[in-house]
Each structure stands twice: as structure tokens, then as C-alpha cells.
Image (cartoon, rainbow, N blue to C red; front, side, top):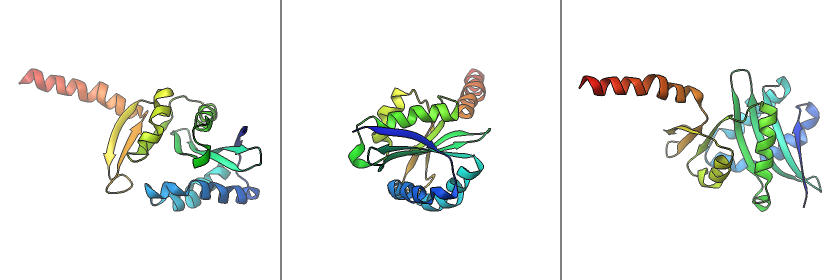
Length: 174
């Protein structure tokens, strides 16, 4: 089966698509309980003002197979969510969505975070596209989960330019 990848611009006519995206990605609520609220109050309105971007994959029949939800502002280039319909996984759709997101965001190093429970599903893709682990945070979205963060340059700068020299100086002073 062939899949068509396209970037969607937000208009009122996209209400049906918004509902399809919410249904497709609904399982994200298991690791991010506020996901539905975020979609309704942040993501979909952001499509209209241009701060959010939506890239979708549809099959030959027009059925939604996957979606990648992006934040695209001057301050932040981020992959917010990536989801592929269960029966469509393993067909390269996630990779195609990821590649298209790099074009839309105009970077191959977007920020991304993923819950520890979902990390095994996406690890191969993150390795393939050279996502660099930055840090992890327990309880970011749910008390019992750990969130893994990638491509956070501020964290890398903090580690390399501030923390490493400070630790080295402390060792020398001992």
C-alpha cells in the first residue's frame, strides 16, 4: 500500500481532520494525561497562527495512517507527538514523517521528549536520525514515568561549558 505524506495548514475546514488526529493519537493520554486538553487548547489553535504544524500520512483510501505534530516558533523547533496507526507500523511511515518534519522545521535537530514506556518503540528511529540524549526527568507528565529529552542544546552547553569545568575545578581544589 502507498502512503501520501502532506503538511496540513489549519483552517476551520479541517475540523474533521482534527477529530481524526485526536482519535489516532488518543493513546498518548496513557503517558501524557493532559494530551486532549493540549490538543484542543494549544495545538489546534496553533495551526491557525502558524506556531504549530501537522504532517500526516494517508493511505490510498484516504484513511489516516500516521501523524507528526510539531511546534515551530523562533524559540523552539520541536516534535511534540509522533504516532502511527498500529496496523501501519513497520512500513517506514514514521521515518517519512520524521524526514518531512526536518524540512518543515528547517532543522535536523528538533527537540523531542519521550516517556520511558514509549522509548523502546522509537529508539531505533531516534538512533537512525542521530537524536542526542540530553537528560531525563522523573514525573514530568506522570509521577511514575520518566521522560527522556533529546537535542536540547542548552543542556549540552550547560554540561560542556559550565558543569564540566566547575567539576574539574572542584577536583583540582581537593
